[in-house]
Figure 1 (spheres, one colour):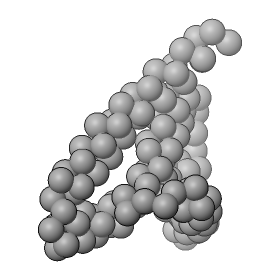
Figure 2: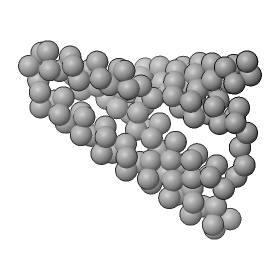
Figure 3: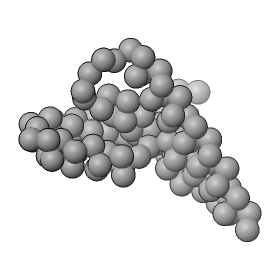
Figure 4: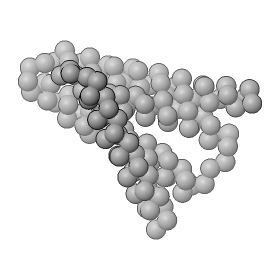
Length: 127
């Protein structure tokens, strides 16, 4: 039961964080491009890389791992919204936007996970 509560609490925090990011980015953007989802997903990629790199060397309980990675970061990032937005682009005859969004999300996302991981590893070595 504790594991389920950890995921639920983390998910509530992550989903709220994603909504706040969407509101803030939405105010700055006037674009048809889903910059809100892209921003949340890329921030989530950087955070998961940083936290993965850090907690690879620092012990972490299974419950806290579930809270942080499955709950909070799982709630913060959103694959289903990303998929729906791409299908919407295809439905409205904008395949180039779909392809650019897919490439940007995946290429930058993978790079940010790696950068986060390497940054955490570097900082742990320095300190």
